[in-house]
Amino acid sequence: MLGAAVILAVSFAVCLVVPAQADTLEWALTQAYQNNPQLNSQRAITRQADEGVPQALSGYRPKVAATATAGSQFQQTTSKSPGLGAVPPVYVTTEANFAPHTVGITGTQTIYNGMQTGNRTRQAEGQVSAARETLRLIEENVLLNAATAYMNLLRDEATLDLQRRNVQVLQEQLRQTRDQFNVGEVTKTDVAQAESRLAGGRSAVLQAESNYVSSKAAYRQAIGVQPGKLAPGSPVDRLSPRSLGEAVAAGRASNPTVTAAMFGVDVAALQVKINEGALHPTLSVTASAQQAWETNTTTLLQQFNASIIGQLSVPLYQGGGEYSTIRQSKEALGQKRLDLDTARDQAQASVVQAWGQLEAAKAQIQATQSQVTAAEIALNGVREEARVGQRTTLDVLNAQQELVNDRVALVSAQRDRVVASYTLLSAVGGLSAQRLGLKVPVYDPIVHYMQVRDNWAGVRTPDGR
Image (cartoon, rainbow, N blue to C red; front, side, top):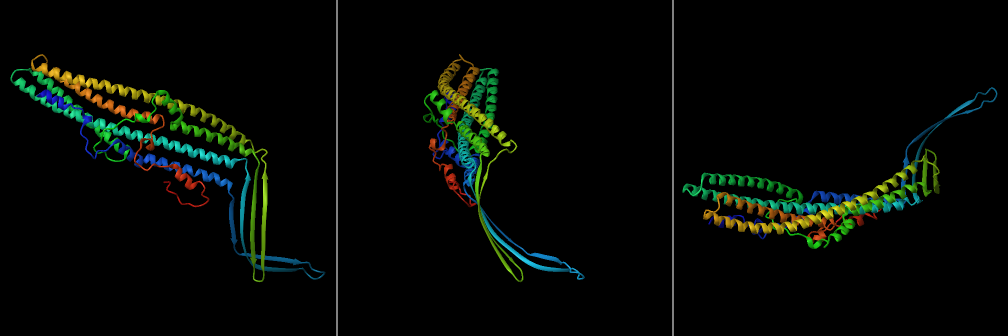
């Protein structure tokens, strides 16, 4: 009877019956995609980068300014007329009040500035693309963290259930051992061994409870909601490359860290051209018109001025600062190219590591499943042998503990299997809401970009959705 209780107690916790309303891994990923503040913050950063394009495009457009003046002016004039002979000179003082008023408008249009405006526009577009790749990286990290938090909580919940069931069995084992001691079938040593193993089981429960509480807090942080009853998670191997070579190639080409570094190289190259543009001539046209009025008590004077002036400026020597800036930007370009090589190497290392972890987790599951099966058979055999006096109580306790340990190892291996599949998908740049098929409105950064790119005026902030 006790043997049946032992087998029942260590039944695999992951296979617990899941209610119809259980939270699924896909549901948790959806919540993280919608609610994670880090992801929403990066979306706002991407929208800020979008504004760099209309700011650069403004260099193609005219700049117009209107002016107006009004006021009161007092004038006092003293004149001297020369005297003639005995006639002394005459001093005449006149006073007048004036009310000058002017209105004017001035427009300036840059015709040529060494292609700086065009290069600034292309640079801003590159910065937008880099920001989108950074957003994709943050999205991958958020989804991976959410999947990890989900599977950690599922593992710790199953482990806690296993340890609690183990304590129940140890309590039954201790009760039966005491009964056997009372009738002289076992010694006090056997009772002490059962008591020690029960105390160890209770300690394991406390540790499992601590791990479960920690994982629950991490789940809340990563996903944004309190966990309910969790359904088992499944790996996403179907979305990853089929071979290590394909995975490495995908990682070196599509990992968002790599693509962001590629756009960083483009931005740095355009900065060199922008700085070189400072050595080119600039040509601009300025048109202005002004109407002035000046009144006093007796007269009204009007004056209208209009002009259109072209200005050509050819830099000859300005202290050498422009040349230093160009050299500096070329060094920055070289650094960005080295950063790209570093990003590719890091992406390759991440892919290889994730691939190895996934393969190891698959093998670990097979090994631990075999261990669990063997441990179940061994426990049944030890129990039967103990009944006929061929095994001691300690042998039974050891066999039972070994089965529990194997069950816990299997739970951990299954968790590692799922997390490793998500890690590999992230390393090759394929972990996204679209790729996973999450039932959630996908945030498209192009929407906000198109809303602001060609705006000539206005301070309203579009929602970007």
